Length: 301
Image (tube, rainbow, N blue to C red; front, side, top):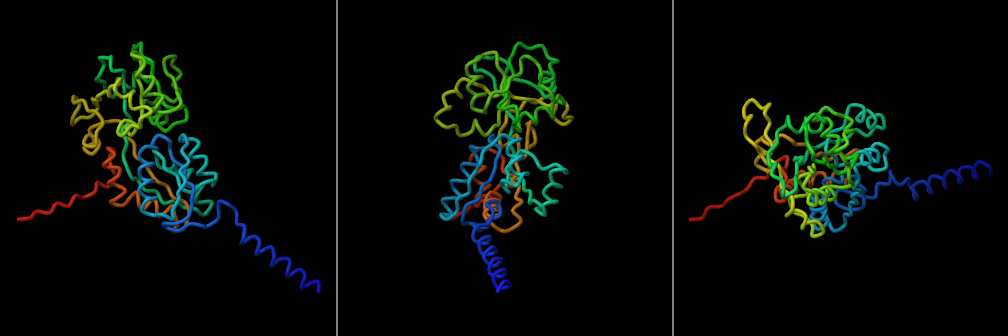
């Protein structure tokens, strides 16, 4: 009788565990159905919102949830196993890869687009040209300037990129400020003639109404790379062409990183973004897709 009671008790435990699995381990999604939370760098919300919209229209039973965060917070969510799909402006480091492999969750990493870190100024400013060495001098406090330098967020991927780019990992100059978002940078520069802003190019391509009016009051700075032996004297603004030809010097790659360890909604959305249709969305939005879609032209007599 006791043996039977013990057996029934453990059977009940198994049934309860199967019925109420842990949230992060519940496999209630498939390639194109169900719900799954992703985390993404908030710098790329405009382009990712377009990808999400088309993916959901095409897959009525799929509901991927995008948690937009600054890079540090997005990475923390991902590595702590709160979410298993991350969209970032960099690849993982060896130490970060080890964290996932130790959990037996080796990630699938795919580059899907290329973004331009864009330098903007007030429309009343005449300083429409700059250079790689000039920008490095400004970020290192070695250039004489009365301009205020503004960024989106102290924990953003853009700040990390520019720190690595300049070799200055502190940014303690009195004229350097962090705001809260790319839109706040655009707004600040549009209202201050003495400002220089750095933002993701994606925020300039298809602006929403709530900040579109600011764009008429800013200008994009053209940049030359005097260290480029092949083309040291030509200034380039960000564009699909200057990114594709590797002429614009401030470029960063965008990655989707999937560590779900199974074919599910994470795999489905990643495959969609890498497909010709997903890449065409990036192309039409104005960024550079990692794989430029082909265009078929039919000639008739």
